[in-house]
Amino acid sequence: MMQFAWENYKRYAWGANELRPISQQGHSSNLFGSLKGATIVDALDTLYIMEMDDEFEAAAEWVENNLDFNMVRKNTEISVFEVNIRFVGGLLSAYYLSGKEVFRQKAVELGEKLLPAFKTPTGIPWALLNMKSGIGRNWPWASGGSSILAEYGTLHLEFMHLSKLSGNPIFAEKVMNIRKVLKRLEKPSGLYPNYLNPNSGHWGQHHVSVGGLGDSFYEYLLKAWIMSDKTDEDGKALYYEALQAIEKNLIRKSGGGLTYIAEWKGGLLEHKMGHLTCFAGGMIALGADGAPDQQTGHHMELAAEITRTCHESYARTNLKLGPEAFRFDGGVEAIATRQNEKYFILRPEVIETYMYMWRFTHDPKYRQWGWEAVQALEQHCRVEGGYSGVRDVYASSPNHDDVQQSFYLAETLKYLYLLFSEDDLLPFEHWVFNTEAHPLPIIKKETSHQANEVE
Image (cartoon, rainbow, N blue to C red; front, side, top):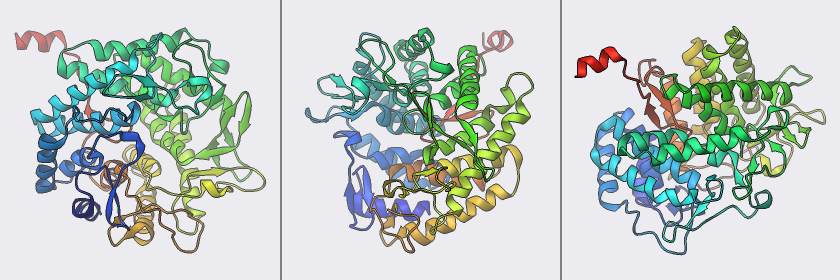
């Protein structure tokens, strides 16, 4: 699958951000401004892990010769979040896996280009940045000029590594400051609203979600602790407190016995769960063994229940692929009821959770469920020129959207490969995955014993 996705990208869209597999040409979304090669950078580590060595070398050569951050056009903006998780994360991971200096150098250079986004009164970064002028702003639709929790909360892992690799503490300082701002704020019911105004330092509207707009903030609290070799006690405490508030306020059981994570709007629940929210099964399993008060078993059970619900969202469609969002109201369970929520864009979250559940339980059903997804992808998303998302998973035959997302190669296919690999490939005691599935090494704290040996 990876070979097919990659070969077609190379044939029809080399150097472009993404591939349009039906029109067989390049595609670029507005997330990357005038940056190029998102698929190449995003896929580097997948190529390396799958031992596609020639392809990896060709990609590395492209990065060396063509990935130029000074060539950006002056009237374009990038999404700080997307560029961080795909480009910075992809380069860091490629460096740690291959040891090629060019990746370290480009990652640090790009990190420096992102720093002006933090020039706000609070230090909470802007969502959008003009990399030429250094001027930032927020999405015009975000509550009263707010920054978004999942966006400013998903910089921590990459920026800690940028400080480590550059020797410059500024990256770590920027993300630790975000945490300081959040710790000072009053949380409604212990929850983190999705919107925060970077000028005033106050929350925007009280909308809470473990799906889009919120998701990876929670993931990064837990992973910051794990990546610090479990020395970041702050990250740990914030994660378990947040999870407790989520469980109390958002996690519900449907009449049919499916556990789901609802969304919270000013105290009212919307009984809807997004495909993006399905990463939470894997996150809760990953955090289970650090859970306070002998709660490990409870967390594993909760993770398994959420995973089952997400599998049902796939099983209840015609194409056996999950919708973008599904609801639990008006007599429906785990089904999308709105036309604009029925699409599937090759997203990884459900498969990501299967991979974590397999690693922690070795229950064969998780591989079985992963294999069902493989068959559905092959049957409905594979087209002559690559893989495409589909517009309606309940239709009797697929209507393709003609985009092969870069995260399909970075995440979906990598998590499938790991699901069917031995546990010693990227073992969890040495690696943490960023939210784009780029593995970053755990930063080991030297014990005095090791330090003495080094001397």
